[in-house]
Image (cartoon, rainbow over all chains, first blue to last red; front, side, top):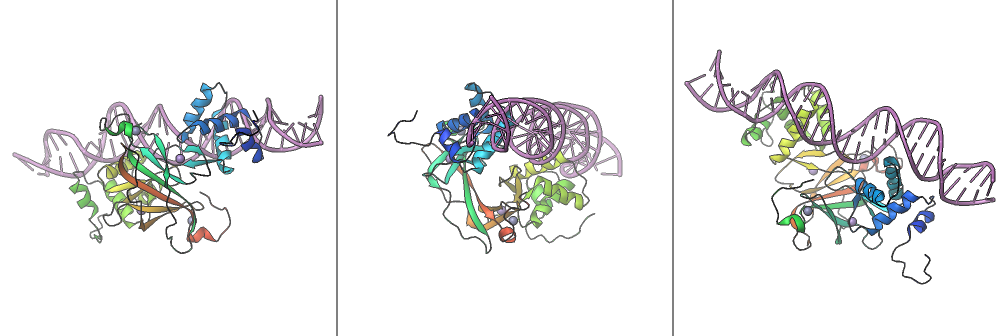
Length: 153
Length: 153
DNA sequence: CGCTCTAATGCTACAATGTTGCATCAATGC
DNA sequence: GCATTGATGCAACATTGTAGCATTAGAGCG
Ligand SMILES: [Mn+2]
Ligand SMILES: [Mn+2]
Ligand SMILES: [Zn+2]
Ligand SMILES: [Zn+2]
């Protein structure tokens, strides 16, 4: 798999894991690759389904812990979205902290890569800024012109 | 029971409820007044504790439904915050859509009344914008200079 | 005031999403 | 191969929120 001079579009899953001192396991590899392939942040449940589809046996808790580890290592990031479940996405250097759009009809989350998640607003004295999460709500292009309220879940 | 004269800084709870065609119940009144008195958004749990402290007997589900109704009516609004529970606050006309700060150490949420929750960024074609939620993360003034990680809950 | 209508409530169940503890397995280094 | 220990799998539990349904009580009215 090591193409001598290929553009490293992203680091391979193995490389990422090893670089962070973790053990290379099938679950971690599959999770990373699933996230890398996805254009938008995925929920734990969606990732689990992807692993199932790929024939990767895994446990619910293991998946939670794999995701937790990825976030701790800074390989992935977690966003809150409008629903009750976290969404996960690979943290890319370029579109580092971008905003997200949450469709209140279909529940889909879209990355707004060109909308920065805020500059550095003036915080009250003594506050330490770490990061910003900006989530826009509304209806996505697919849902936009459809019924007022359909599959809001 | 009847606190004869609460200072109606804003509309009184009764007025708000009646104006929206709802029935005036002890739970709704207490919830509204609790929210009005709070400087920051409160979780369902915190509101429940406030009702308990005030001797207002209530049911978990009733409280959920009271809050749901307040949001539907536009009396209150719900924000996502960094944790897994919704936060609720009275919707004031002045500080309509302001950003919030979530302290990742103590979990507190602070209203940033003067930080608007985004103007109207350019969305992809076909997307309908409804509202924006901007949550800044970091450490609040109280937690700022303390241990690296204490009550991260 | 007493009556009526039905919005709200209070249960009880249940669902969805995470977390904790602990025994077992297996990735890595030697 | 073997040992070490990080990672997994499983069961149990916690938190947060919903759904159904019988009962209560707010509001309008005579
Ligand atoms: Mn994104
Ligand atoms: Mn606020
Ligand atoms: Zn949509
Ligand atoms: Zn704090």
